[in-house]
Image 1: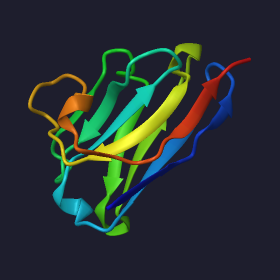
Image 2: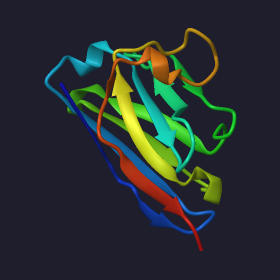
Image 3: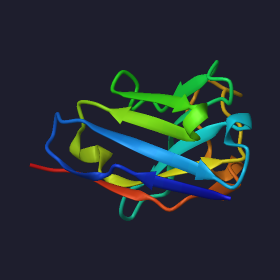
Image 4: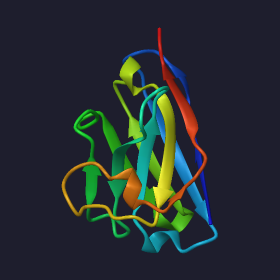
Length: 126
């Protein structure tokens, strides 16, 4: 099982980035995928998730209206489009699988996901 996150970088406040999560080694189309982030000195928190059939998505309140999650099962890839980025979005972003999405309308819970890939750093600064 492998999840490879990419697309992070340095962006100014108000800018945009698109993160990608490339999956391999398992049947990714059959599983929900979640995005999480961890800022320095803070606990890992859920950002967004998408169900295997794309029928369910969920977002943290802090990113609703700014972030959009999507997936291309033919490419085994999940995306996180991040617009209007703020300094408080600065964190290492991780994608994860083998967990639930849509049990509630709120952001995914890190403790409920079994496998995390390596992260990609997003820095929002002027």
